[in-house]
Image 1 (cartoon, rainbow, N blue to C red):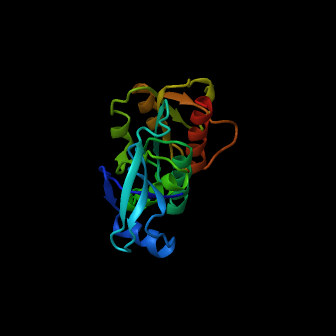
Image 2: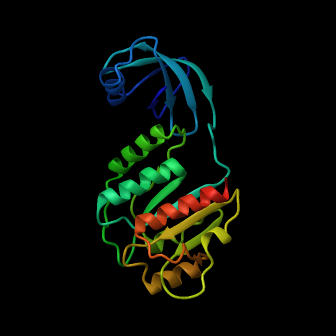
Image 3: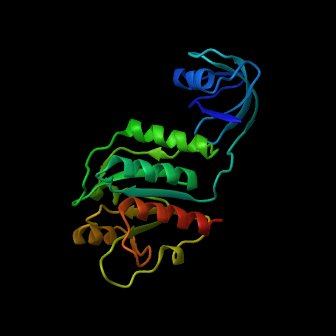
Length: 233
């Protein structure tokens, strides 16, 4: 069944956005009476049928709703330095949305290769991934934030920083448990600076390893998503 996104869904009927209406009627060729699913990105999954198949204002009759659809028992917030190539950050957010992520914060670090992001572009990537993977929760995508400011924000749960400097560090899988809220910092290709690692420790972030391989930024961030999902499976 085809799925569409609408950030505010009431009761009785819902009007798709112009983009979603065009996709439904012109691309998917849906007609009056065809069944559809609607999600609001906040956990609600609605079942409905096309009432008016118009390419600019497609009207849907709502039949039923499931609240907190497949809500996970943990939350994951990843602070990651955006990659120089936008497509690599897009790739991470797409896959992370499919696996499970609640918040994404682009970190501006000392060695950051990119210091500005296109929030609208990332939002579209996340919405598409949410619909493709049949999820009802859309991750919150925050604006760029300096590393020093991010680590001082209060967070509920456990806090970690992954880096490649030598030293004994436990693997992420060995220090997290099911049903926990987790915040994880992932640095740029040049890694965090030693000063940033020290500042994070002072703010209560635990140093962790993601394995023996040296991973790209977006790969490391995705490994954290997958590890958290496996621990909670």
